[in-house]
Image (cartoon, rainbow, N blue to C red; front, side, top):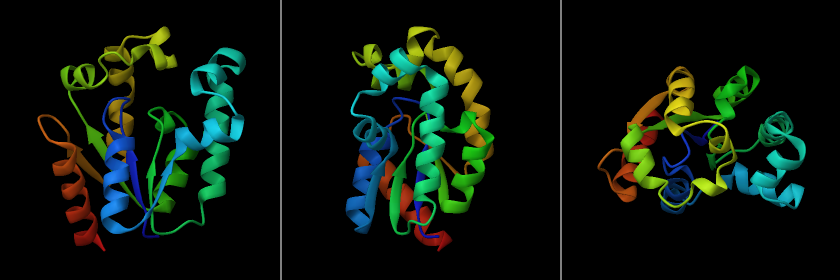
Length: 167
């Protein structure tokens, strides 16, 4: 399948970079978090508060199953998508996976003023979440793209170049 899938920590730029890549390639953009919010009629933080993280993770898996036949799309995933091995398997069958890798310092800069809207950060530090997830991102991804000190445009161009080289 000719899809580009972006995984990585909150604050790595998956949504913003996904839009840039989709626009440049004339692909559909699928922002999974946005889709789940639209389908549920509430923000992710509300889903976490009302139904818990397990319910949200189940919604992610359901959405991945619905998207399994899609082609020519850039899929921006939620930061915790890799916590479920079923999701990892589904993603690997859907396209080329890029891990947008950033240092803790870079992610903290990118998230400045946004942490109130990140439900996972209510009970964990960003450092803890990164420590738990970084190995999962690396194991899931076909390619790792460093985001540190790079503009969103530079990151998007790098993803496109690698993707076209792979195709």
